[in-house]
Length: 168
Figure (cartoon, rainbow, N blue to C red):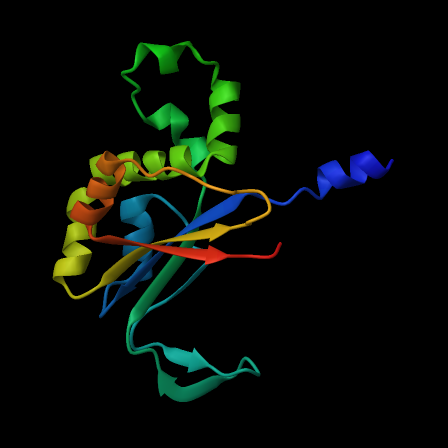
C-alpha cells in the first residue's frame, strides 16, 4: 500500500508554461493564434480585481496571457524525419517527453518555430514579451541538455527561458 501511495504522489519532473505580456493585444486573439487556452489572462484597460474579488478603480496597464504547455500531446502534430525516432512507439515517446526536459524543450522550439514564428515576432515588435517558464523539481531533474539548435530557435523567436526550482 505504501508503494502505491508513493507512485500516485511522485513529483512531476517539470512543468512548462508560456507567458505573454503585450501593451494591448486581446488574450482571446493570442489563444486563437496559438490554439492554446490560457489558465489566466486579462486585457489591457480592464479593471483590476482587488484581493476581495471586487473591481477596483485601477486598470491593467498591459495584456497578460499564461498557459500550461503539454509537449507530449503535440507529438502527432510534428512531422519527425529521423528514422530511429519513427521506430520508437508513440507511448515510449510520450513517456520520454514527459520525463525529459530536453525533449520537451525541443518540441516546444519545433512547434513554436514552425507554426507560430511570425506571430511571436509580431508580439515582440509591438513591444510585448514572450517567456517560456520552466518549473523544475530538483529531486527529479538533476540535469538536462539544451542543444545549440533549440537555443537558436528560442533566441530567434525572442522567447526568454525562465527557470524556477520548486519543492513539490
